[in-house]
Length: 310
Image (tube, rainbow, N blue to C red; front, side):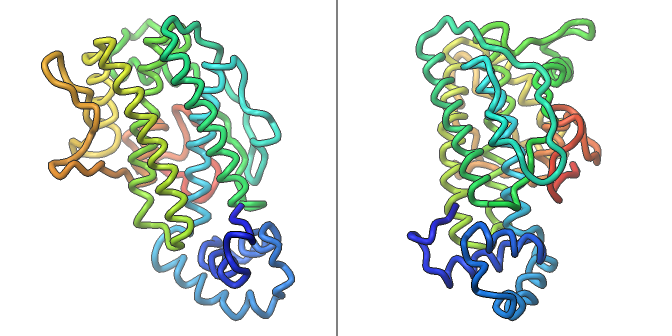
């Protein structure tokens, strides 16, 4: 949580006022930050401004952070099972909305020591992201929704043409499959945080989101480099093309290059990473180009107000 030792009481109060989705969220944030003693009068005095900004300028910071939390749950569960053979502790998956189970997941028998170490570090980072976002949101945090890390990968692999109609894709069968599965998540995470940046009103929250984006970019680079070193460029291109077919008409997604050149950093002509809106991100993780509220990796949808694909 954004601590009182880091920000003054008025600063934290202003951050909460600008970031809460509604009056209920505002009070939850206040309680979590230990500012309930400021009283109803102080909340009411600034309440109109916060509500107006939320409605006129788009989703609140709390809505955006909860959207990010859904994605972090997915990544953290995927990596936790791959590295440790278990999911996240139940204590860090509770919150508002329906809490769901994790479908699938098991430990990967890594053959390459460096890839095993990379995966372990990423798994720990993703769990810390979950813990940080939950602490920041306080009692306004959403619960972990139902996550499918078994059937969804088969559907994604079929859509990409990696396997045939009657085949299945097990992301935990070997380290190559693991890397291809991780590739699906990591680039999406980077573009999600990049796309959310213009929507975040509070500068302290924006700085935190930028910090998580940077870590996700390091993760994505590690996965992309590992895939390139294994010569899996053709399979990666199929996944990249499949993502492009889901998130709209623009051709933004990029593979990792070919034998004669590498493309570890997916960026535009100015070497700037591209963005996805929350709806576009949900197109990818729901595995649909249509407007829906569930599917793919989230068979019952995500928790929170940002829950509909484009």
